[in-house]
Length: 341
Ligand code: SF4
View 1: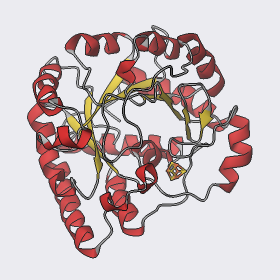
View 2: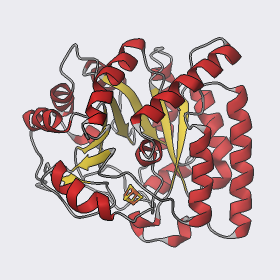
View 3: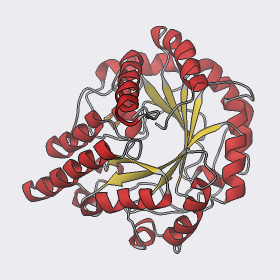
View 4: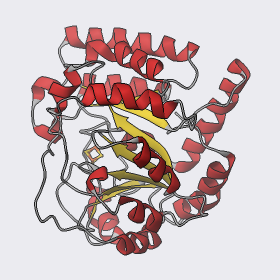
């Protein structure tokens, strides 16, 4: 997560801690649509779904009242496909409210400067833009012609507006693992920060994209070590906390990380308004109580290490402790504000 303003931090603490103590999820990912302008190799979605059933903006207001998250991810599919996206965001975060912290996750294919500004106006705190390769291979991977050039022109322009709210999001696979540092340097060149997560076989069933052989793990280790030393000298560019970088390596090495707090600290709402503990499990639930009663006590899954999961395996108080310790260490070290990750 990007650097928080004082107001956002105060909002998350004052509303998040009581909600956490009462058993509400800290974060919710609202999947706006299953349709997507891309069709990526590492993802189970892709293409446009005709006549998809989607809940209306007002329904999101009701869900917020029921679930009370302090962090909300607007995800998909590709959320920018929805014409009513800013209306939905306003239902989730009414004008003037300090929470929830709103993160919009996009592949950027439909993004323009006007849309970026409209998302900010609708309460967005962070724009998370997917980037799998530091060049035109990104187009082939996502199967969107011209996407890399589009981002290469647009993202530096948006970053130059000075809002410091854009984070590239890169899922590490066997294919792009050798380019982790090149992706980092692309973020540097564009003037934004970057966050890495791990590919999960649960998405596609395709093991060829995961990293498991001793030779590949050795290459990954070298890339992650370089990433950590880059992070030491470039405060704020890498959004992953050190424990997440190490967790990512362990996830590939062991093929899983347990326990997982899906359904407890975070959950997903489908475009039709059903609840799911996470995006990789198909069973839909109609209430938080049902998830807590039937899924959470029996969850033995450790099969992904996506960012929402990696952070929220920690409790909200531990996340807050981590945030303040990073904040104070980085301020001492660099004389500037630090990021949550
Ligand atoms: S590890 Fe957790 S978040 Fe990931 S697929 Fe399993 S239950 Fe879902």
